[in-house]
Length: 95
Image 1: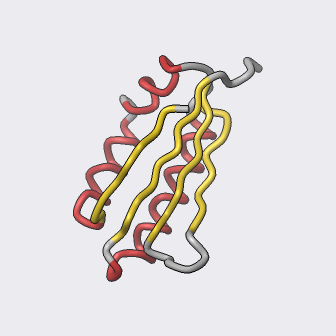
Image 2: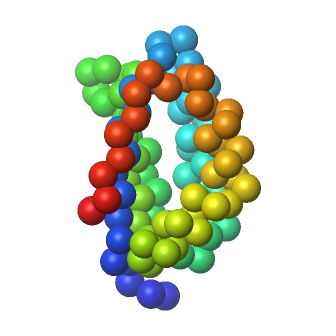
Image 3: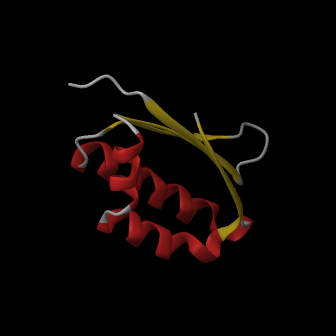
């Protein structure tokens, strides 16, 4: 297994009425990503202790190309389409 050299951190602010649905869907996305993608090594989902509408993702990949492969998968497209209207804001940092 190749050592991951690329990571991202994503912060979502979710509309209150969609928090439970978003969490269910993002946990499935995390599982699918690690299971189906050779270049995805870690996909953690964390919820802010004081505000459950704030969700953090921490993902590690072989490299930037593996992350771009992730973004091109059918399961990523399905996730993005499903949750698009549930999100108030989103920020992504490449680490």
